[in-house]
Length: 429
Image (tube, rainbow, N blue to C red; front, side, top):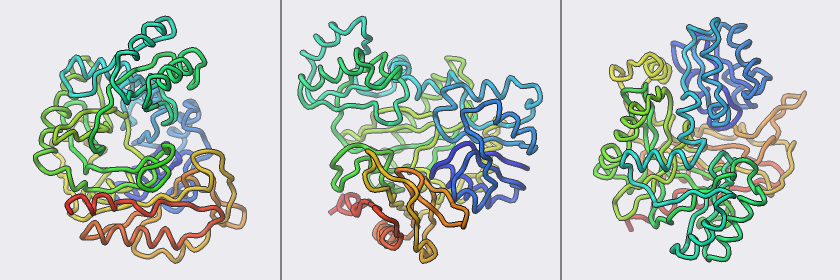
């Protein structure tokens, strides 16, 4: 069958890489894709937010399966749009509809959902500009540090951890009154700060049944030892040493099952991926956030560990037959190191020639922000440029292979963290 992936980052390259291996995939397309997806698929020069162009491409290329990678089109309702088109009635889509995507699209919605269905999470309250004074008074009584989250999508930048009440009050005013994050911060969730270790668990569901994918830990901050501003992700590891069988069983019983039960009771027919951002607080899982899609760069360590045919799983999800699907996960460890442009996550230059990619051996190179020029040379085209994923029988082995590959790649201004996975190596010491 012909398959279309929407998106242009490392996540979408990882999906394309995995799907291209399936005997069920005839022609694979990515819109708009990048230099990496072009190696395994045909890139289509259309925006994933141009719903009309996407619909026309599905018809023109006889697409039978669509995978929506990023959150923005999901929150904007692309699934609803495509399902409303009579000519696309037989097209299978992996991704939640607009209401289901509110798990990610609205922090207030997701917090109320968790409260209603008894899912462990940090205590919180939501404020608007009309209740600003109430919010400021609430901060006077709140323990520190305190977390402020823009309600809507803010490109991963809508979360502020305030160490003092004064900083928290300024942040609340900036978000509500000054619209620091635009419409995304027209509501602000003020949340208890949880102390623990973060990780992510991923679920593929057909609305009734589910498969829990390999868990992962990503590294958000730009600087080593988790310093500096947040980024889209500087690396990831799977599996996670502290997420033992007992902990993951708690995640399934206390979070995964209640989440799916809640979606069903809310009459939300959710088909696709649920990213569950967790905090391990003294062995107990708490939900930090939901995403309505796979994470990036976590996808680059999760998919390489899945040994089952991904297209078979995706079709089973779309057809509500996931319960019948085999699901095999590799025991190997996957580590990815993300190489970024100098200056990221602030201002950075594009168009730098990437060299030495041909030297990379036994490591999978996933392209995130790349393009090609007229001579076929690969150029930087984003803040996060490449994710270099290694598989090995040990965490140490995977870290070494991934880091060696990151050192080999060359372009002007490149930067990468040299401590990805080292905290997990030391965890049991």
